[in-house]
Length: 385
Length: 253
Image 1: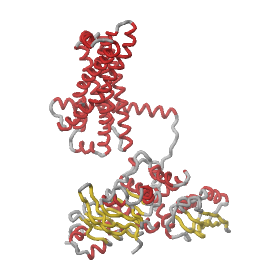
Image 2: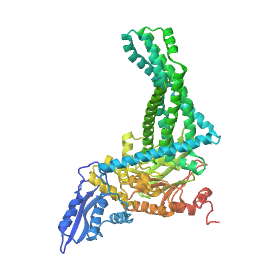
Image 3: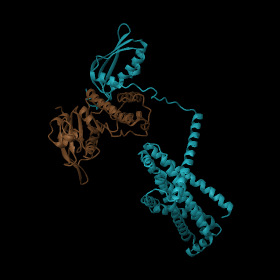
Image 4: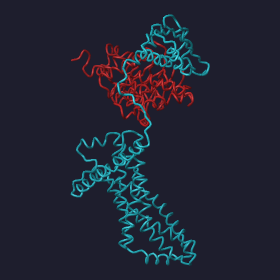
């Protein structure tokens, strides 16, 4: 008995009627078309009626049953379960063979005890506690990861690292040259913005020439490393988390471990190395682009000649400033690699977990970057560098 | 022979210029358990993709009843696809949804059932595959065999007329594989579902198959169709006998 067609949705009528018999017996008559889109009386109503009449024996009988699909056994299963629970004698002998078979099949494997979960709304206190425990777990994860990383780096420094050089080149290509365009655009624009914001104020005192100082120092010490790091955390950090996360889902990381290859050395070190190699270069390039952006504004809108601009910069920026930016970018590179790789390695085993890992990697690395930048700036300020 | 449910005519499958199989002709009867068999890499799964609308044939036709599947417009093809259910090799459950939500998804999209009715239907389908009580589990929390059965429950959600199985018993222990076979048979018997299974599991092939097609990767075409038991008894082709006897020849050695 297959469903014929489901075009006349609302015309499909499935009927069910409970008739009382003698001696607490009852007959449930089933008729009509029990198809997917049929409107059927809620089964709960039948159950309450059974309860109200304190039925002890129930016979289910088809009476003009025209067609049926899963709706019928699904419906009857609820009634059958109720009968078992209330010790009601149930007779389904008159039903079509297929329905009886399906009902038997549905209860062939008993529900595993303890399998069912009861969802409870957790109280505020429980939620806070869970969050705190999660934070503790996360920081533990970070400490363990950093520890393993340090050991792996130590091994690598002693020449015992096992990763493929080709991988390193691919990561370098990906982290460096492939990120060129976006870094150019962003740092050029940041230089422009910096120059504009500063110039409007400086122009009030007729001190437009100091745009150069502002842009150069701001870019070389702060904005260059910072913007590059934020771009790279979104571009590369997230990619690392997704790559490692997917590898984790496919058990590839387990495969490495069982081969006796440290995932830390094989997967994390080349990625971190690529970032450590490329980030300072990208940062220097970003500094240059920022200064070019500033030059465009001061030359174009504020009548500062390019020669003047150049001399002012040469006076303002010394090698220490460049070194500060350079060192910052090294720190950021390590932080981005740690955030991305750690989230990837700790990824759960589902598609959504990979997405979560990538998101967490970006959030983590931006937090690490900004916090460490503030710390470095504070320290340098105290040291008067 | 029962009425034809799916008819394949002169089907040639290719990835670009690389031909997988050419000139396939066979008919899948209503209510049959049809096995697509052949060695690894002969294009069994590719054939399945052509049948369920994931890949377009390079040449040839696929008919569902009398309707030409690939020359139909997208809307008609969707209509056909809504009448089939597919169990993918690893279950292909949506990992961000619980089992109940996985099964409820097609029910919510394509039927007019109320929430309570959908919940009942989900419990019923899970019970059918022996997973009663596992509604609120995520796919990652259950074993591979259970994932497969949950995938079957989802494939059956809309009471499809045809169920496709890609390697149903791969990755299952013999007992679970046997249970799955029994389940397939009872679905066919009770609901009259046509079953198409891609497999090279000999035990399953003989246990459930009522009709089959044998694909060969060297000649890039089909070698035979028919009941697998009959093929084993009557086929003259050494390649088929090799396959059906695990390389031991008829009667074993």
